[in-house]
Image 1 (tube, rainbow, N blue to C red):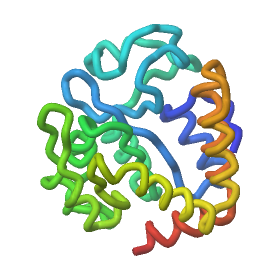
Image 2: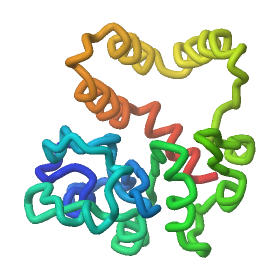
Image 3: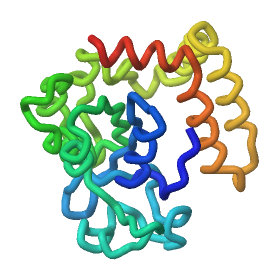
Length: 207
């Protein structure tokens, strides 16, 4: 869905809903001071022409950045408060954002998955993902020596579940470095509008 508004802002979500969207998909990262912020990229190069990581800035510093159309960065808590009746597909982009994201979701949220809150631990960059795996947020936890075999099996599952996703993934792998991250964003947009993605996402949210 093409929206004439800066991505991942309150204005973008409002316009998407006005056009008839029934679900919102968004991305969450953590600020330096541990706030779940809505942002797709790890840095600000694409959205603000600044070579700095989101995780290196505080919420106050991110608030000072103009994303256009009078918009700036918003937090996950603000999105949940602004659109309490809308179902969200929240993509937590990094382990350090897991706890802030979980903390931002009110305890009385109907589709909240409480088992995710405590099992996710961050120690020196390593996280215990077995808890999220039990509730279906992580497909599997793989030992380093098993990564290649697991990757082969994942590709086989992708082919069975979504030939389109497999084709787009191969395109992304073979693309030159300069095509990223725009190519990934385009692939996500195409897949998000596909019927099989809608079916899987609806089934997950209705569990």
